[in-house]
Length: 270
Length: 264
Image (cartoon, rainbow over all chains, first blue to last red; front, side):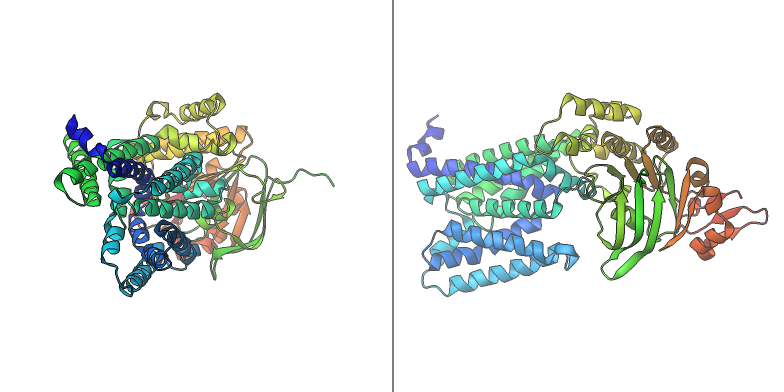
């Protein structure tokens, strides 16, 4: 019992755990759409594309999360603009913006004087450095995103499964698609603190892919995915505490183990 | 002047993708509750016409009126049964989920399904003979069962106009029969059905009207008047074979088993 309780005697661990679980659940739920709509590449790209926003916020001594949020939403909407009416394919638009934003971010950061520590925090997360203010921001954004997903469950289901039905039922598909991109961008921003830019995509994809193997309907898939996301966050954080490894890696590796178990289970069931 | 407006009226429309116009200067009127077979060679613009009718492709010219009002004003009176290739069969939904989607517009996008919605879903499933498959994943069904699931969804929408893209291609006899029975049933309920098909035999025996297309309207009317040698030659060109006994063959599909015949 003390094995479980000891880390929680530290306040930074309590905050870290709370933040990880919220991010784990949020990423896992948004991740179901990422997996089902084939947006894994987009999630990864978006995570990297927020780097210049973070760098600019750092230079201006503003809040890094706000900088990231502005960059992510800008990138999401630009992808929507470039790929609108098939001007270029969506993955091409993503590739262009991904590379450009990442280059800009690295250029900005390399021009700074002292960047080494902060860059690693941005890339891999710094879950133990979560402040009370961060917690409120993560909690508030998570709640808003999940509430939107719950309210728009049916429209999102239809535009994902059957765009033609969406058109016959006169859904504003373009608007909903952009809204989904913005929600995804905000999710990536929220996960910046716990798993960092380089691993955010894994938290979007892995729990949802695991849940896809275990369920047959969208709503159960979301719940199972959320459960796996939360469990991975908790187990990962404890592993990180006891084995002194970077928390983001520990969380992602735990989620990957869940996926492997589900994959093997599914194989043997057949 | 008070006459009943036609269910569906197309006035001089051009449809296409970007600069490329696929269908040119198309005008026709479909009265209440008729069954229309849309016939033409591959790439003649049949699917393009359907996409314009559901509002997926903007018109480059002309107007479409439903009940005398412009397209888009009638939120959910057009239902569309897509071709099999257009659906993501790995999506985690059951047959019942798919059919329930047909009710979403009526129940309101932000509201829960009522018992009326559930009844409509159940009735549609029974009508298409797939009530026992309700809990199955859509991906586990056979091709014909999948098509019946989408037909059930279209019925659950309670449409005034039902569009079906190639429902007779590559499905089993049970599904073909279920589809044809549905067409008859729809006519009793005064629902207009517009169906694209390669099967001239079916088109002339089971439909009230035939629409012959090849990038423009070649003929529209009763099947017997539309499927003349001259019209078919215009539509199908070299792929139309006329036998000595007057039988006509359309040979334009790649697989040899998809040749279609009609007795003149």
